[in-house]
Length: 475
Image 1 (cartoon, rainbow, N blue to C red):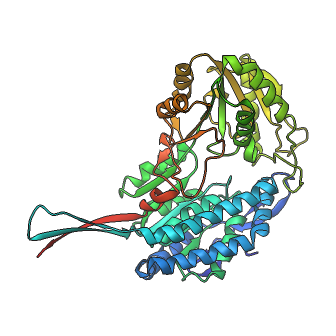
Image 2 (cartoon, one colour):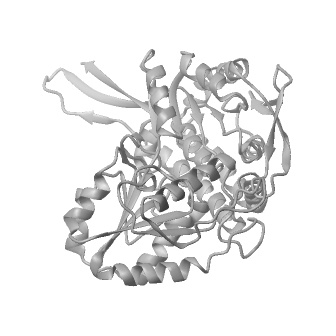
Image 3 (cartoon, one colour):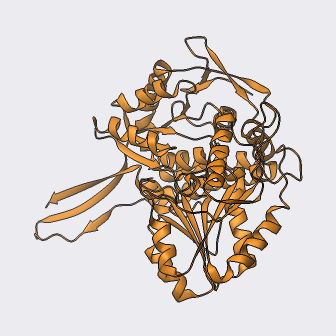
């Protein structure tokens, strides 16, 4: 595998000749080193993308789609290699990593077709000697900043619609999980995308991000990460009124009503909460259970949670891998200790790993949770499920909405009318109703409030890479 940056169709190192290590969070062992690029390399990539823009934008949607489909097929052919890379550098169980590769590839397939459906319209004129039409045209060079928790899927979710719309892209992946992005660039090279159409820069996040935000050739930024960083990007982007798509933090409530199928609810809560060791922006972060079914639900959840195995992602029977690093582990431990100090009861887990350098944490259930606890107010990004009892539906809705975040929420109810009433009142961009895994390429993904701006996936996912041009024609 290459370990450099991919710019203008070439593999290069950093001009500063500096490198940074990448470690396996399951073992603490060094996987390899990557070059530390900065503003210079980012500018080179942006310039290359700008040179490629006119040719790429001028191609037919079918031509661009053919490139995406070639990359799609290459991803599926190299599923095992990509999945192993994901597990090696971020710890995700291999069976989950395989699923991520297929999910990531699905964006390429979807947008290869969706790009062909981009169209303007003819609008009736109020004047007999005028005609009105609109055109949908690519916005220009895109800067994409992707996170570590889904290193393949978050990359293709940005790359596919940008390229389908006619926009060249410069990608900056997380320094914790760069090798998945590098492997994807090798497949981009094999798919023979024109030079400059897809570029990868690695290294100094502040320097690269600063060049993205300050360079006038970059017309659009797509960022997935923390709300704190998203707000900084909004401030920086204001200087040029730069277009932004931001998929930020979450604090997802999971509401279990007393008419829910409890076996289904337990299965879906576990799927949402403990997938990727709880390191997902839409994973359930706090569980509200109606009083009439509280005891039964908690007992069932504990029974099933105790069956989950924590271990190295390459072990076939592992269900939960490590947290990404020691800082993530410390945050989880801090939240659990705070909850226990304020009256929560540890039903499963709750004890951190022994041995220096270990980033594993067991799936933990906390009962008697309340709003005084950090775990009920802050995104955990770890395998901890705090549970709070509620009585009336209105109480659950109020508690669920009492947060500045609005990315995802979950409701479990067997009643169509009751479930719909709850869904309509939840202030979230994504709601899973009897479904703990709602993400799919053809649906719009994004949040309300401080959880972001814009949508990724579906028809909305390509719209943010397009400008609408209105043409008034005198005849």
